[in-house]
Length: 116
Length: 114
Image (tube, rainbow over all chains, first blue to last red):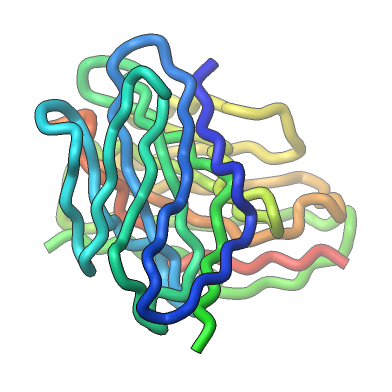
């Protein structure tokens, strides 16, 4: 069965420091991968997505993610975090269930705290 | 433009009482619809998805059920709530033109079962 693992439940980094959030997936075919962010009191927002092509994907808010098939990973990175990046981050994998529909499986999330 | 409405925003229910959460989508037709539950420390768990009227797929065995009586209406129900049903419930939709379109989420319902 398809699954997504985010091994880090909670990460704290200093403002201005670099960030990497880990995501590993289990899926037999070529995966379609997403990163979502959920800020306190707000809904879920799509940061970036990978379907095919260039394995380094650029997203909004200065985030990027790199797809590594050999490691079954899709880690999220940001070179310099801002206090406003404090939020919960979810990795997700898309599983087509028919030609016009798919289901999306999320990881358990990583809560990011920013140290002033 | 497309919008998704989910209500109520918060709900407090006693154990054993019934549940009905409603979600409607506007501005699109034949969307894929989803119910997720976000429990503390467990991330977003897919409960049900629907690719059309009356077509419901359940992802996990549980005390809940879902129905899609109309194209853009998705209802989450329970006959008797359990304490473990507490959590934050999110409805979402995606388009059918591209099966890998992103999800659009509703604002969620915080359910507390006491």
